[in-house]
Length: 200
Image (cartoon, rainbow, N blue to C red; front, side, top):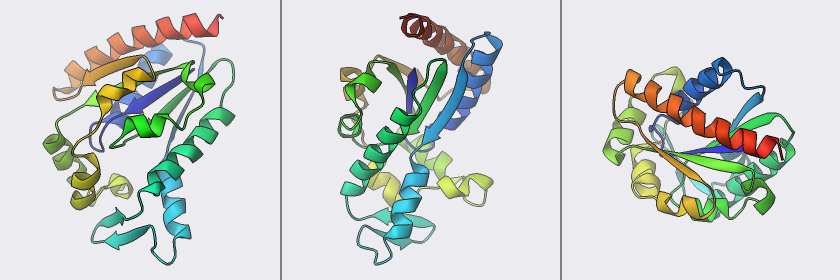
């Protein structure tokens, strides 16, 4: 089974994953939990783009100049997800996009049939502030420059996700205890889906 963990940079996807993993473990679910994201793929594309035809370095980060980069990332991520399919394994697939519709079209129908999506909903301005706070932190490698944030993530089409996958929307604008309560509720939905798909 796969869980697509989606939302803007700075929305709290990684934090929510850690909480879900902890809650799933305490629930007694017998699953190997694996998490992947497309950031290593992006780094590889940039490393191979030595003539800067697809991106350009900017102060504090980068700017994507070739929109096909996003499709290539999704295709490579889809291949990785396919390789990870094993009974008893729960694969979290984390990424952010302007167009989730465009990204999800790269995933095989057989993968999507065994998947659900969690979209972490947070206003753009809050995500921007959280993301910029990463500067100087150990998470700085995932820092998205403000120009790229505004260009790529200010608007998204998360309303299209439900056309591909069962969708759970979680708002992450409250405190830690509020988020913990929400993750407990999400885990119950994950377990229902897990039991349904792992027993058939």
